[in-house]
Image 1 (cartoon, rainbow, N blue to C red):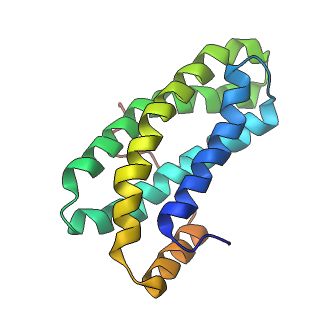
Image 2: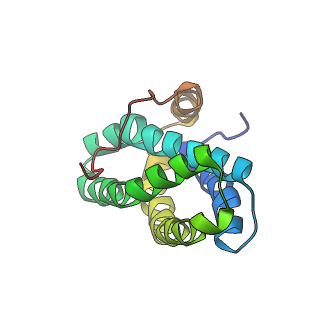
Length: 153
């Protein structure tokens, strides 16, 4: 674990998630990289909603956290659909439009999250607190049945 701040840790995940989704959206890529990116996205959403956001909400950052949760909910159906498609592994052409849609949602979501939410998270603690948060994020794993807070029913 080389990240020393929560924002740095989570932003690195953003880049790794993009690395598996964007190539498919662009007409290339492969199932293995896509599946790994989708699994990381699911974990990433879990880490934010279950570990990071509750801490930030206690500091009064309610509205930005609400917006992030709402956007997670908007991504969730496409994430779920693509995850199922990865299990079937038909033609990648069948998922390009969904990957493009998800990638566009991430391009809107991630910069706001990095500039507002991660900056606030990084400003919270001293070095020891940051390292503890990063260690907590790194050790966590999403339960198989976890669904983001604002996923459509």
